[in-house]
Length: 533
Image 1 (cartoon, rainbow, N blue to C red):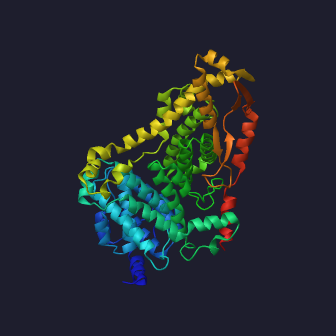
Image 2: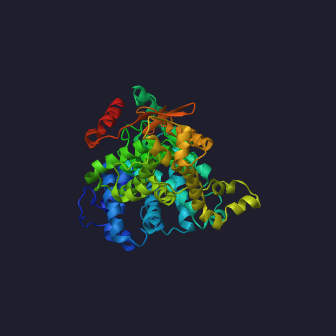
Image 3: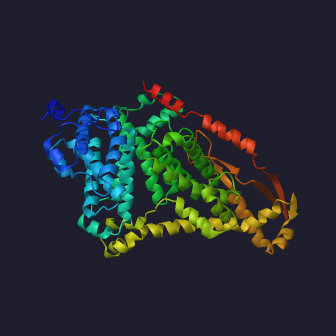
């Protein structure tokens, strides 16, 4: 059946009841078989969504997806699934629509119901592969578009389901039944192909040089669907590398995203919050505490300044949850930087004070609250080797505890640096009182051996001599700077306090915050779009 005939039949059967944004959807005739399998309002939504996708009406799809899909999920499907895709397929047999409907169907099971079984994980994976194969194997750009929010949710959920698959208790049973499901190489390859096909890195590089991105993008890169999927895949790669503890490669994945212009291409707030959360955490684990604080504060300032607008986002609660995680990491970064209690949300002020005093339990609590749920590489790669020894590594018990094992490993790496900073708390308190003093005198005051004290001083100098990122540079780039409020140098047996940075006054902080709130991130986005014309 050709597209014109299909649309004609659909329009004749179902009026356009979802064309507007009205809360109360008017009653309309729908195919009898649809009414038999679900509520009439849901049947109207399904047929209207199909009609909109076929007509490539992005604005209408956006309204259906961002408002009505979530509203109907809360109204009718809080404790059950949406209508079975097989039953819907008997009424609407269009292949692309079925793939997109299945994506919504399984995402509802994973996010809302949180009770996916083996068949759900397998079917969800196969559906994602079908969707990406359809998009990537085409000789020309596929003739359909989706709203940015839906495209982001597709990539975000793809990575999320991979993460959940590796960590769930039925990992071994699933691998025995479907050994090819959720292979880490396939997941990385999908993201890589979307990035390559869209030429998004080349477009971002061209824009940074002041050139027209359209000049380096082919027909795929100039298509909104491929461009946005490529951009979101950069963020997906950032997440995957962070989950495996490869922080350098994670930052390399987003090397062409200018962190000073987060809304250059995408206005999806959850995407931008994810970028700053993941990049900031990578900085934290790379001992670049100054940069971690900067990125965390940037996104928290922005989300707080637009909180009234954010309340209307369909994923508002997700944004709030991510901001709570970022706040915990910001408290931890402040504790590692100089231990000072700065402008913080009240929720973490107590743990911050304890962590600043060297309390490892408080530091661990902040870390576990804000860190991602790591995955254990040994479990992911177990299926690549057929030996019994490696197969045992993928057992249900090992897979189910892999996240805890990986998190504990990363936590111990962080606490190792935390203990070193703890040793400097008393030393710094004495250094603030002097312009210069002998090492022997300081060792006597602290009750430490002189050689041990020298080791602590040198270790502290190395830790505080950090790479500091500047706007317009790649995330891995930076210049070496002293990131401590107190600097000193050792000349022979004498310690000279070189500088003491005076804390900002409340007035200066207010001026800086006001300047941030007055910045309009949409200006750069407009300029990017104009260069494409």
